[in-house]
Length: 71
Image (tube, helix red, strand yellow):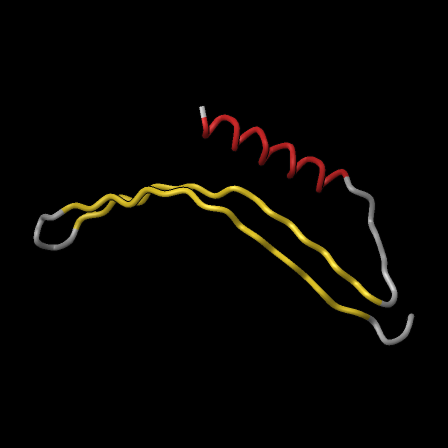
């Protein structure tokens, strides 16, 4: 259930980002984003031992900047 909700939210965010209009800025610039993350990794070493790593998390992205002059 959690993965379905996160997948739906991720697809919604991706589609809205792709449909966004191009934006320009002059002066101060700030942008932020958050998103879900999850994954599973499986492996084996050369002695026959296996390992599994599973987890969830979140991504946080902030961009701050500015422009000196308009070109």
